[in-house]
Length: 256
Ligand SMILES: NC(=O)c1ccc[n+]([C@@H]2O[C@H](COP(=O)([O-])OP(=O)(O)OC[C@H]3O[C@@H](n4cnc5c(N)ncnc54)[C@H](OP(=O)(O)O)[C@@H]3O)[C@@H](O)[C@H]2O)c1
Image 1: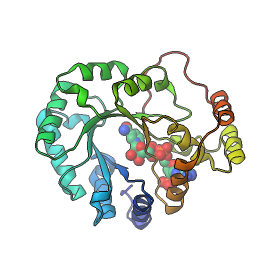
Image 2: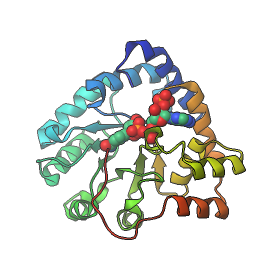
Image 3: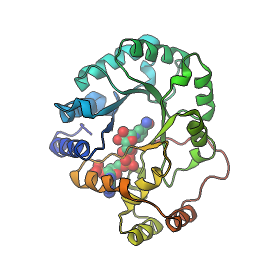
Image 4: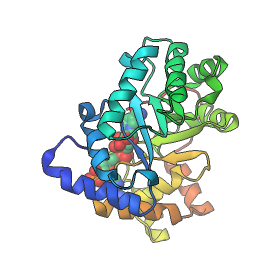
């Protein structure tokens, strides 16, 4: 979002509708549109900053102790704010996690971030992270998670739950690719819902999971909000498990 001028009015309206409906966690990143996504978010939240939980992300190439601080300050400028609620390492790069955590701690001490987290870190990287001084403060691991990407259920997701680390499910509708699936459509029809609502409600069935769909139209935002009220019954969960089986053996962490 924020990349195409001709879509800007729709995107702003979609973000503002989300806030009005109480979907107040907004996820962005310095990488998205080379900062243009953050600038769009700034415009959308103008006059209502206090309602919003802002998450933005630092690129691994900027994740040295000093680089994290520099990147965050640039993000704050684009976001037109003085702090973000959660600052996230986008994926693991060549800087050590120890160094990146130091940068996060500098930002916490300066009041520029309220918490920090990571994204696309696998089970073994997460275990290394929490073993570091200050590592237990990690608030979230933002991970690819949807009906067709269930690998994290085997070990990483239950481990995060146990540690009190929330999982932010990104691409929760698999960028639209799962929405035409026959079983998903059947389950949705029986529940009087849409496939997107079922897919989102499925990611939200566990308390530790936050779901961050991208929706650039007001219609999609309104539809997605209703997923919060949708409860998947045992019959729906069984049908979805059969169509999108849970993982049986460990495999490398998937990412998009
Ligand atoms: N940490 C990471 O590495 C990482 C990677 C990827 C994504 N993310 C984050 O996760 C967010 C979402 O991921 P994503 O954009 O990859 O995938 P997604 O949310 O699964 O899918 C977005 C697509 O689904 C469509 N959509 C949304 N609601 C819909 C509905 N109710 N009915 C039909 N289609 C609907 C959107 O259309 P419209 O846009 O037209 O509404 C868009 O084309 C991103 O915005 C980003 O913040 C993080």
